[in-house]
Length: 480
Ligand code: SAH
Image (cartoon, rainbow, N blue to C red; front, top):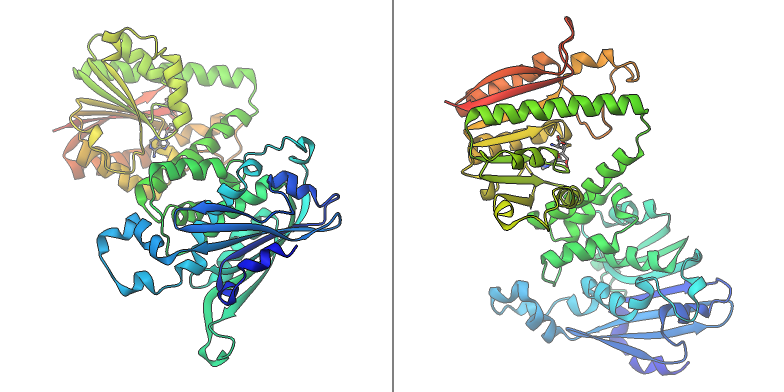
């Protein structure tokens, strides 16, 4: 156990060092799980330096693995594609990145421990799913203002106990005050694979000054590493935003995919009896037929199905020759995949395929792909948006996409009291953010039409009750 001393020089106390210890029997299994032999000093190459892996302690009662970043500041600058355009500044060379480079710590974790992160272990397959006691120590962890609170909010929901110490700028001159670096100690019981994923995602989330290029690929990495825990994390929005460097487009895509997963689970989990489900299906079928007939009557040749879900309306639109160009959009990637399956998209004849497109997108962001269409349908979609996001949808649809005709449906809350199984004040679906009375819907649609130069008419969907109206309500907007 002398090998690793050779790489410790006087600067090393400032370098980012991660140690993971376990007292699980037999603790030395950690070496198998990590696919790194405890007796050997090993290293992995990084784009801007290397990381050393060694075991300061390895016996059957306790085993500790260490990962030490050894970053070359010059190549860090050369490789930092996102800062390349800024030209030379002294700050590029004289800065703390070689020591803390926390996003590189993630890269190092993924490279050094890839087998364990993927949950495979040829020699100890049974150990992969074992929940073990871990103690993790992370030195020189940079965190923004209010760092301690943020660190707690990120790690505590995952079941870790935390000790955070803020480091002084210089131990010899304590009067210089405290630095923005923390020493973090986590203890908890978890699977090694989960622990590594938590560290991989959350270390760069804390860093304000990232040196990596964010591409669509990062979204996939984040979703993959966050599988099983990120969608339930109370800080998921902040995690995604910070991880993806606050680049709106990618954040939206990642958030959208996560939220979509939630929605689908809700639907699958709902415990409704067959009669209620049948009744809903009939009503939905009725609603779709009505929407289709409004679109046909408008004379539209090109149509949007916004929030197309699994593509029920798309299938009906395809059957009508009148519609030469059909575009379905949804925020849920999973729904789009189901829609493709239902439409037998892959096997479609080329001439049919030319008529239809499915795209992934959010209705709350301006999207040029939605412009130039004659008609648009939004069937039971708006109530899935937070009310404060509706203003964005309004502009995206009526100001920018601006189809000649918009057919929009939403539940009628007045009718809810006729649903015996629905508690008073409850919504029909757990993902609904609101349900409007007929008066509220009319007020909203009237104001939107007025603001964007449309005229609007209303129709009931489903059988009407003399006092409470029909279960669903429809507005048909036409450009003046
Ligand atoms: N129109 C379909 C699906 C209705 S469910 C039908 O009538 O069968 C609501 C759909 O809206 C879901 O598929 C959901 O993923 C989608 N959705 C919710 N918010 C969205 C947004 N901001 N942008 C695009 N689609 C959204």
